[in-house]
Image 1: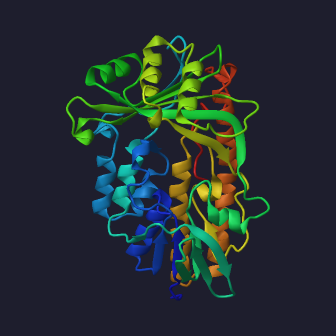
Image 2: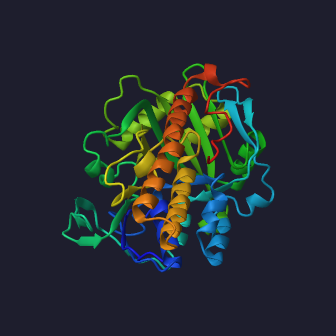
Image 3: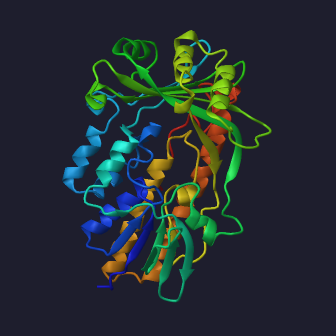
Length: 399
């Protein structure tokens, strides 16, 4: 059996915590740290993710008691028991369905609730923003901006799309590619009557669409019901708009700028949808802008001492709903290689390099597919039943 290594995990998001849980189950020595001041720092953003082709891999890395909590984190309680798996894409002006993506097994879950679940039994070192990485022949030393120092054998950067780990180890090509699209959205408060009407007119869980006249993209997803909000007749949905910006420069300066842009670009939406945007912009402070960038390189140096996973390794847009699923698969594949190393069937050098080559082969094409899906979402000519657009095709397999 090979000697256990000490791992440093930068980033306590979904991927970093999933790896931490897998390490804990194997009694592997690790420390996990995060730049946020505490677990609650990002919880008000209001976001959901769809677990589909990586769902079984996700469950396989967790103890049974945590697996049950995955289902409790669904945006609609018990929805998996009646979910048909259908996903419709609409003409967002007329409201008519244009394309139905073939059904697939999925769970739509609240990101913050999944994160809290994954924190169970994990001691995160909060308020530790990675500032510097030093490597020797045998060790990696991380220095944080507050002076905290962590030393181990391997650093795993799970610190998101704007990964400091990636920027340090890839000074020449670690920067993100900016897409010429702006994306803004908000958590919108609704009543049961309103959610029922959306479900009757469109879909109870989530749907997307494009306005033909101006190529504005619209995204709706349920986020929470009274079972979660603990407030009578209080529901929340995620409502997003995005639009082409050929001369993209910088993100908006103020939240008022975001609301004014959303008002302009919501013109042409079907009235059954536009009221959602109107409600979203009532409070500018709730508007969140997502910077649509990606990183298709998926390759880095120091591959036996510094690894990347999740958005740090393959930042991609959300237009195919695959980023989280690739991140989960990163964790699953990493543990397969680590298990081979611990069993003495691979050296660490081989295990680490096999992980790196596998993640590039799988995720680099997925980044470009998601980029094209984003561009196509803002080009209504691509929205048709016979389309070859990756926006509306079956999600990528894990091969």
